[in-house]
Image (cartoon, rainbow, N blue to C red; front, side, top):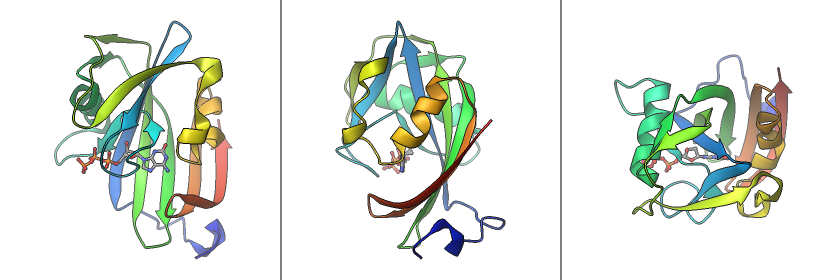
Length: 162
Ligand SMILES: Nc1[nH]c(=O)nc2c1ncn2[C@H]1C[C@H](O)[C@@H](COP(=O)(O)OP(=O)(O)OP(=O)(O)O)O1
C-alpha cells in the first residue's frame, strides 16, 4: 500500500468513526495538546471515537466536554477525512466547527487547552494532513479528504472541496 490508488474507496469503511471539533472565536482557534491516545503529543482539535448509540454530533460535543470541560454551542459539520494506515488501521473523522462555548477551558487527563491566532496555527506540531484541509475549513469550504499514512508519515493525499 503506497498510494491512494491501492485502496478501493468505493467499499472503504473506517474501522473507527470519530470526530474533531474546532472552536473559533475572536480570530482565535482553540486547540489541544493531546496527552494520550492516537496522536499523543501532537496539537490537534479536541475529538475522539464514536461511542455506541450516539450520533456524530453528540460525539463531537461529548469529546469537547470530556477533553476541555466546556460545551461547544451549535457545532456545524464542515467536512470529513478518511485515513488509511499501512498497518491496516483506519479512521473516518467527521469535523465540526463552533463559534461559541459554555464554560472555561481546563486541562484534563486527555488534553491541555491552547488558543492560537488564526494566522499562527502550529501546523508543524499537528498531523501532516491538517495543513491540507484546515485552511479550506477556515475559508468556509466543505471538504472531503483521503489520506494514506505510515505511522505519522503522510504517504499520499487527495482533497475535494465543495
Ligand atoms: N491524521 C489525523 N489528522 C487529524 O487532524 N486528526 C486525527 C488524525 N488521525 C486521528 N485523528 C484524531 C481524530 C480523533 O479526534 C482522534 C481519535 O483518537 P483518540 O485516541 O483521541 O480517540 P478517543 O478519544 O476515543 O481515545 P480513547 O479514549 O483512548 O479510545 O484522533
